[in-house]
Structures are given as structure tokens and as C-alpha cells.
Length: 94
Image (cartoon, rainbow, N blue to C red; front, side, top):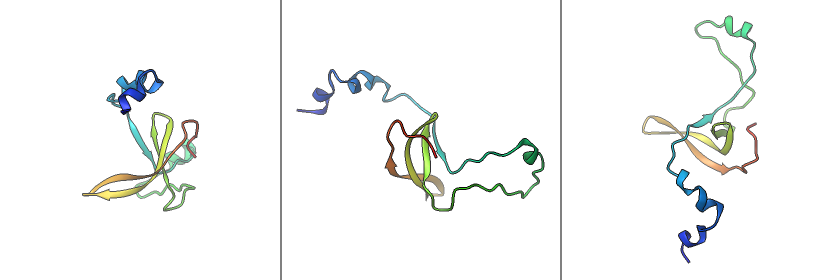
């Protein structure tokens, strides 16, 4: 039995028309809360510290939904993300 036959009648088959729809994919390296007062004190060369350590997995999101975790890579002088984990649909970004 092929995949098309298996998908018929399933929710996957009903949503298949969305497969080629374009979505915004985000790779979030880190996030922090910072007061506007501190932002107003920034100067050229200011450094913003994050709690995540170098080498930690980064979150890959579509909208606000966490879909995967991975690591930053460089491919032909461009940044990319190597996917190391596909997350559960109910999991939240850290």
C-alpha cells in the first residue's frame, strides 16, 4: 500500500493542501528580559548577556510553535541550522 492510500481519510490527508504554504521559520539563539532603561543606556559596542551557554541547542520555531532544536552551522558563508531533534507539538521553547 502506498503513502497516498494510507493518507486518505486521515487528518494528514485533509491538511495536505497546506504543505506548500509558506511559513516564517525562526531560529532563536537566545532570549532575555531587559528593561527599557538598560536598552536606553546602550552604546556602540555594548554587550547583551544571555543565560544560554555557547554550544546549547537553538530553538527552531514556526510562529510561536517550537518544532525542532538544532545547532548553528555555516554553509557556503551563510548561517544554517542542523536539526538534531524534532520536538513534540505541545513542547514550549525554553
